[in-house]
Amino acid sequence: MYAIVETGAKQYKVAKNDIIEIEKLDYKKAKEVKLDKVLFISDKKDSTIGAPYIKGAHVVCEVVGEKRAKKVISFKYRRRHASSKKKIGHRQNYVVLKVKDIIA
Image 1 (tube, rainbow, N blue to C red):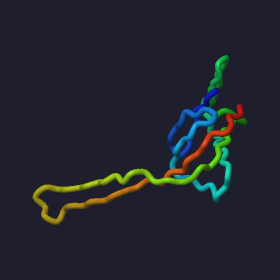
Image 2 (spheres, rainbow, N blue to C red; image 1 turned 180 degrees about the vertical axis):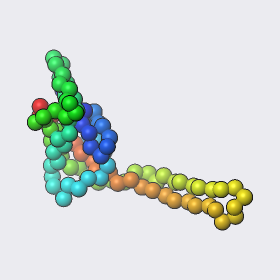
Image 3 (cartoon, rainbow, N blue to C red; image 1 turned 120 degrees about the vertical axis):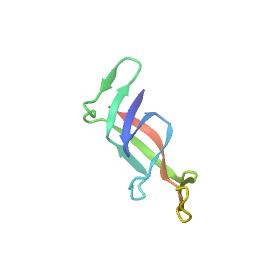
Image 4 (cartoon, helix red, strand yellow; image 1 turned 90 degrees about the vertical axis):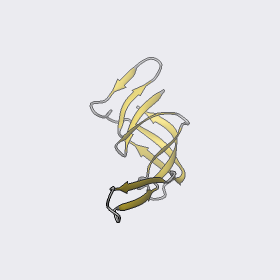
């Protein structure tokens, strides 16, 4: 059984015991997080498609921890302008979740 869940304007395909990294969300140091924007649920026999979400369905996840991605460098440069160089780095914050259960 797997589900497609939307969080942080991105969609993730999850199954039981999967570990996913999602963009940082405000979970207030809770041990469990419930993701309720479920778009699609499928098992071996049948599947359910939401319009846009499946009513009453959610995915229960356990918070494993937080991490940061590798640094991405953005370098902007305009030629023939001596003082027009800009170098900016960015590291995205992530929350690591382990999927405990998918409830349809």
